[in-house]
Length: 86
Image (cartoon, rainbow, N blue to C red; front, top):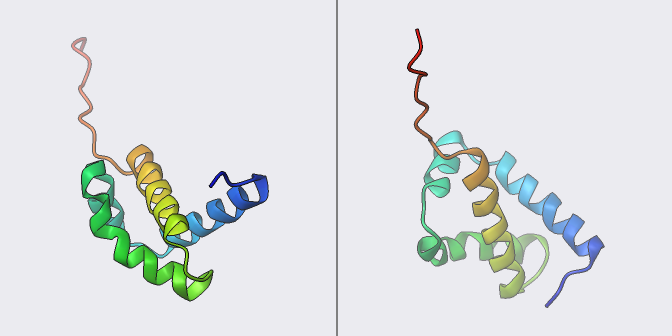
């Protein structure tokens, strides 16, 4: 299923809604998960999807992946090294 621009905007809004409801701890935990672990989150996203936009496992998977990708970019802890010059 290839979403059109309207669908992309709707999914972006849904992802933003989900992220706004998460605590910092939840965001960091998901950000540090590897992609192979994502199916373990599927149930939570399926519940959200069924309550808000109907039953569609493919959409739930897409939303879950977008949430994870966003958190990978924004909430991963990275080592920052100080420069060697004083």
